[in-house]
Length: 282
Image (tube, rainbow, N blue to C red; front, side, top):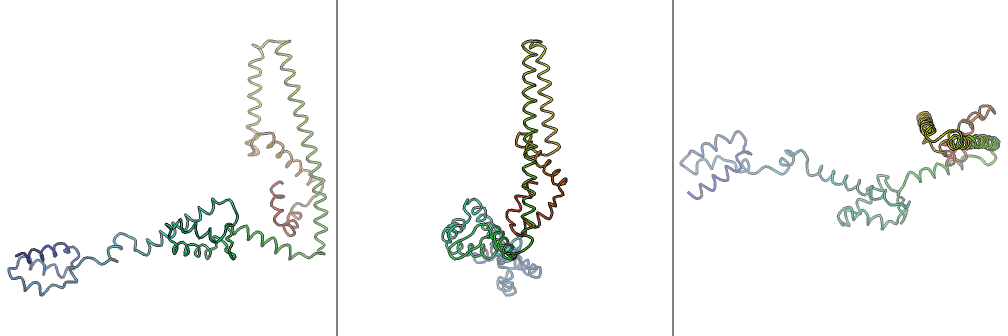
């Protein structure tokens, strides 16, 4: 009887994993009085626990897929750690140590992670130095290629020099015009302040001037807000100066017939890295 109870418990535990063809045999065993007959017809592998692959497939992810997701998470964590480093490069030993710390102080996984980042192009390993910003290296290489591709006696250099001289004159003239406008604004504000002071203390009283000053201040706020809506620039003294300078610069370029597109093309050909700052100021 003890043997029969043990076998019965074993069959009940694996009943859900049994194929439909063996269900009838199990029921026959449960109701049979002879123990040896039903056992001979049962295949032991059919009533065993589910295989590892089947158990993981039911959950939706296999073991290899779970390892892949964990590796992706560790790689993104290493990238975030590298982005926090203010330096452009570190030694290879420091780089491997960062990877090992992210991988739970596992030296083997840390070395594999370092090699994976190098192969993926997230970092550039040259000897014992690891460059953390590959895009900067690409920009430097592009600048070197552009500079070496241009001939030393290229006539376009003279054209670029003439355009730079013209642009410098235009910038100086635009800066002078904007400074004159700022001085005019300073005079206007000074005259307004003096006029309000005279009206407040000599001509009228503060009871009369208080609402006038309030509405005048509100008018200045509305002017600053409209300036922001129109130019998408912060309504400050520097923002006003830069906006007026770009406006005057553009008008002077049109009046002098300055070909800004040609200037940008030549500037990017001979000095590609300095060209972006020039374009952003126009």
